[in-house]
Image (cartoon, rainbow, N blue to C red; front, side, top):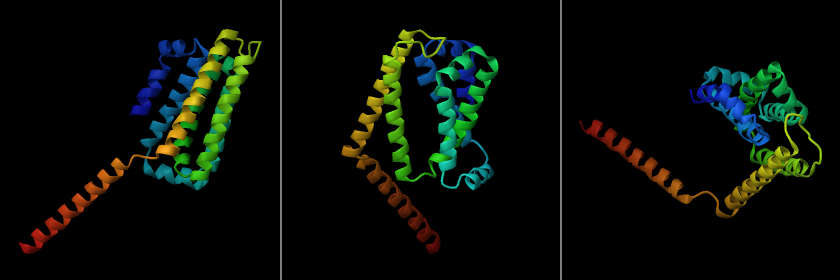
Length: 206
C-alpha cells in the first residue's frame, strides 16, 4: 500500500515537473523515491513469488547486478535527457526503477552476505564521490536540459551525500548498535516465555 501510494505520488504531473526542474531533484530525490516505491511494493507481493526470485537469484548477486546496471544506465546524462525529451523513455524510467530495481533490491539485498554488502556500499560511496567531482569540475553541459550551474549544484549535493554516508558508517563502526534495544527485546522474550509457562501450569492444575 505504501509503495503504491509513493509511486502514485511521484507520478503526479506537478510533482514530476517539480522534481525534474533540477538535476538534484531528478537524481537524488526522484530516483530514490521510485526505487523505494518498488521496494515497498515488493513487500506486499504474495509469498509464492519469493520462490521465483530466489530460484533465479539464489545468492542475491544476479538481482543486485541487474539493479546496478539499470541504475547506472539512468545515471548517464544521455539517459537523463532522453527521459525528459521522450515520453516513452520517461515511462521506461518509471517502470524500470520502481518495478525492476526496487523489487530486485528487496529480494536480493537480504540474500547477500556481509562482505558482499560492504563491497557494494564501498563502491557506491566511491561512485558518489567520482560523480560529484565530475559534475563539479566539468566546464561543459553534460545534460542538454540543464545548465552548468545545475550540474555544479548536483556535484555539491553528491559530495554532501557521500560525506553523510561515510559519517554514518564510521559512527556505526565505533559506536555499534545500541545495546538497549537488545536488552529490552531479551526481557520481552523472557516475559512472554514466563507467561506461556504460567498458563500451561494453570491449565495442568485445573
